[in-house]
Length: 127
Image (tube, rainbow, N blue to C red; front, top):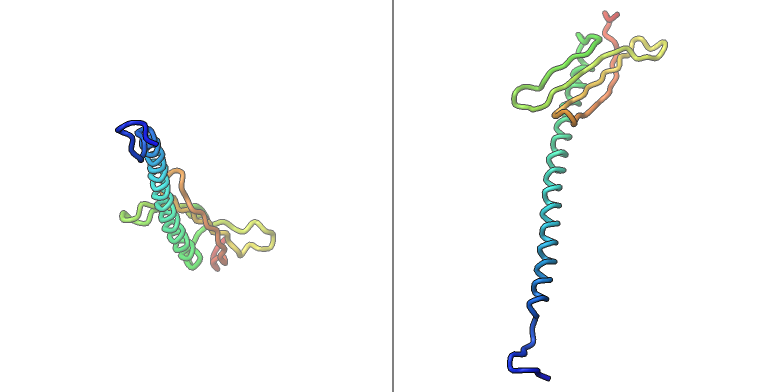
């Protein structure tokens, strides 16, 4: 049943506007998720790089015959935006004086770091 010469089947202006508002809201949400995904991807890549650098530094410390007790800091060169803090101390267990605890922390900002701990036999000439 028609109610006038202009009646045709289709969507009203209000229906189209509501549909566009829903689509716009969904798009904004999806863009926000994409930005979050990019931040998480960057953090994941940096954490992986820091972990690999920490493992390499710990390996070097475990196999260095000239290692000494104490805390040492350094970086990995100009090409890599990471720096490290390494410490060596005797294992605090009675009777285990010939075992050292080696700790390596790799930093890439004030809030982000990776910590690894390993053990090594004390060098022959250590105190």
